[in-house]
Amino acid sequence: MKKTDIKEKNRKYPELLIPAGSLEVLKCAVDYGADAVYIGGQKFGLRAKAGNFTIDEMKEAVEYVHQAGAKLYVTVNIFAHNDDINGVKEYFSEIKHAGLEDGIDGFIISDPGIFTLAKEMLPQVDIHISTQSNNTNYMTYNFWYGLGATRVVAARELSLNEIKTIKENIPADMEIEAFMHGAMCISYSGRCLLSSYFTGRDANKGACTHPCRWKYSVVEEKRPGEYLPVYEDDRGTYIFNSKDLCMIEYIPEMINAGIDSFKVEGRMKTALYVAAVTRTYRQAIDDYMKSEELYRSRMEYYKKEIAACTYRQFTTGFYFGKTDENSQIYDNNTYIKNYVYLGTVENITDEGLICLHQKNKFASGDEIEIMDFSGDNLRVTVEAIFDETLNNMSCAPHPKQQLYLKLSDSSSVKKGMIIRQEHCEA
Image (cartoon, rainbow, N blue to C red; front, side, top):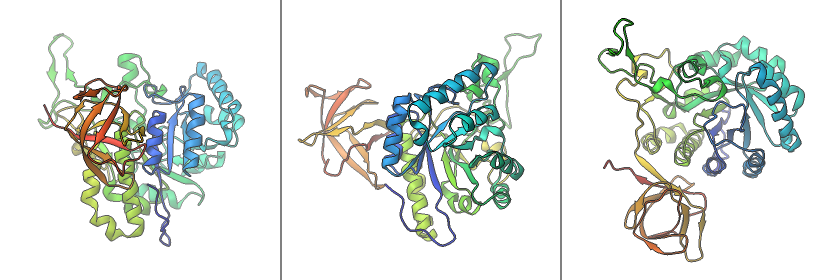
């Protein structure tokens, strides 16, 4: 799916920026309509637990993204300590010697020291300032612009009115990137110390253990072992657990605020999540650029498709004012799962069998869905399942097993399409 060529006068087409934690997910993002993808290398990004990319994988990512006319951004957004500096220098040298200086379209950086190294060692690569840098006013944007940054990622604490004021007070060629969808961090601009304090894993160096999702109690020092529950209006005890951001209903407001790039959070998410979110926002943006009436008329469809991936309850964050108790989830820390990811179409044999590596269990006779790049969902029945040596199987119980599927209809199935199944509670 690619964005429409229709662009209305005085309405700039926003970039749809999608995360990827692996090559598989990157290709999925591009295939389903991303304008740009952001990834982390195996060093110095804020998602150490994601798959992340080797130098060779970055080369493949650059080629795949650019062939589709999209862009690739690489995160180098830790807050560096003294013993990180030489490592960052070596990492930038590896990128340069691999010939990636002309392939990477931008670095996402938060630390001024790393910013300086990037400008010195890889001057051809644009620099985008991470949301971690607390970018809350137009003076900050102008400061970074003066040093050579081409884009600043808005702090999540900003309202749309504040972003609009920033846009009116920065150079015309200075871009604003802002989060559109995904998990919200309870800490200011994502600068969290809880993980490091509790587990020794530093969130500001990519190793967050997400303690904001844990359940907390109060213990009085003279009564060890007596855990008193923490309540807020009797809702529950997950006091730091934010809802997920979702702005699918507010694309006009995001554009009118002057946001150049709509960013989705989630470099640790599955291909199903990336496919569902990318395809839905691609459709919504394209529909709005054609006609606001068309966009409004399809809202229930967008909301249904967004809910097809794993998510928490939704919020609009700070965009329309300060958050309140309705922005939190107090009773649990679990996700809502309406669909299960079964796999990605890797190949189609001459006999019409669909090849994939299975991600979750399903059985012969099950009804499943193929996510077409166009936005349609092809509902088909699994008529037969075969293993890698084409032995017939009644079900697919083993994760990551290579399988071949005979479907009731495979005529419109293409390589790269996501296969999913409606989730049913046992």
